[in-house]
Image (cartoon, rainbow over the protein chains, first blue to last red):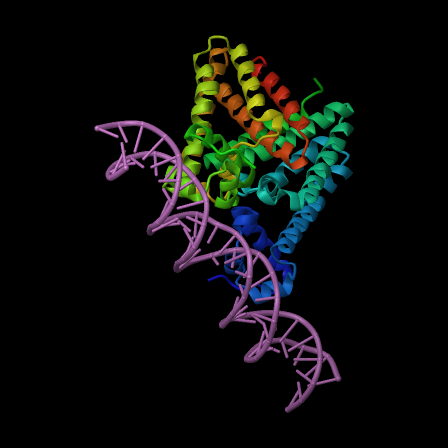
Length: 188
Length: 188
DNA sequence: CCGAGATTGTACCGATCGGTACAGCAAGTC
DNA sequence: GACTTGCTGTACCGATCGGTACAATCTCGG
């Protein structure tokens, strides 16, 4: 028995969890209905656009969460080491130390990739830009900063995949730790 | 028009490509039929177990390819630097410089994860063991060797995800290059 | 207490899902 | 040329897919 949802704000996180753990195609309306406690009638009342709209709004919600809690802090920080540490902390808590998947990554790999390609690219690009900016500010050259920030995104996504595949969240923690020292290392 | 397949050996790669680009749930029998040029009758003649058997045999095929071309060379090499370079080269060519996805990773993220959990874990664990072994032989301590090999697997998976998400295979190439230098670096 | 709008459950739609049954066909063997 | 054996196309199955229609209900200002 799932407690029914009252408003849209409560709805999005539940939808997100369904898409996360089943993928876009795997998230059937039956599953969504069960996870939210809402019948199809209500679901289509809130999202006349159906599954596609649900996923799009979930993605937008995730995007704005990252914008507020990760990207913006990176951009505005004047203490790169602190900013990177804060990012890693936020990432670790958001992904529950590797137990939770990255929906953006999941969608990028799925068959629905083309539908959401723009949002996916935007998400990773803005993250990459924000991280490169703060690294730049720490004294790295533009090219090194961009290389390191891309490496960080690669590591985060890969760590999530491997933690899930091996069903072992320790690889995520280990990867985050090494990634942090790599980000903050002196320019080579 | 797809040229019909003659025997099972030709069949598996085509099946693999379908699962790769659509995921397990996204790979419908209609898609499989189209990609192989075989009707359902033939498909179920070769694979009485249906989709699950197809995917299992595809996974087994991939596993044995990696065993022969990646894992075994790592294990038997007495020149770690050469072995690592060979692995990176083989990985780059197998994944077509980031254009091709890793089916094992795709399955690990999908809803069908539980069905193939054992094969997935086995694949990554054997890769990790083989790579750690050769790193060990290069003079690294056991713990450092394992850390670095896990980092390499993380990087490969992450690079594939990000290359796909950004639709830019350069991030894959860049990540492979950095990973190689990290693998072959002197013990910290 | 009433009416209006928001919300809901349910019946239903055509399409497609994975899978089965089976008749037909090709090719070799005796 | 009969007979087996391997392969193939096709019709069909029940279940489920995403989505629609709509009447019943709830909520709340007036």
